[in-house]
Image 1 (spheres, rainbow, N blue to C red):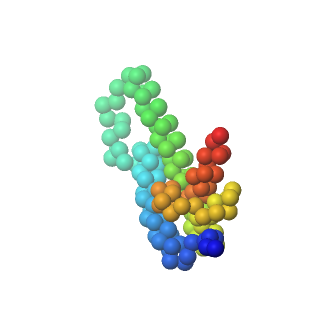
Image 2: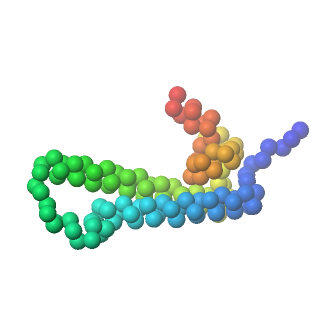
Amino acid sequence: MSKEKTRYSDEELEEFKTLIQKKLEEAKEDLELLKNSLSHKDDHGTDDTGRTFNMMEDGSETLSREEMAQLAVRQEKFIQNLNHALVRIENKTYGICRESGKLIRKERLRLVPHATLSIEAKNQQSN
């Protein structure tokens, strides 16, 4: 009669914490790059030199800025989810599926460190 683990050990949680902190740092850097692109902080003041008022270029630039804005919003949500995962680590509830109450497999957490559902629960949701 083997007893099933109900939570990850402190050592395992520390491993996930390190992984999440690294991803968080990278995500914040990416967000900063996106924000700088949106605010033209990275154009070195050359934005208005030789500007042609071609409608196609203006439309393309607007579309590109909208896509960057959407990426920035997604990145902010990703950062928020990573921060929530750190809170779950501190509470020692990290890696527990919110549907089944069972442990989420380590492989999944390494790929999606902010996951709150096991693959099985996630698949059931999409059906």
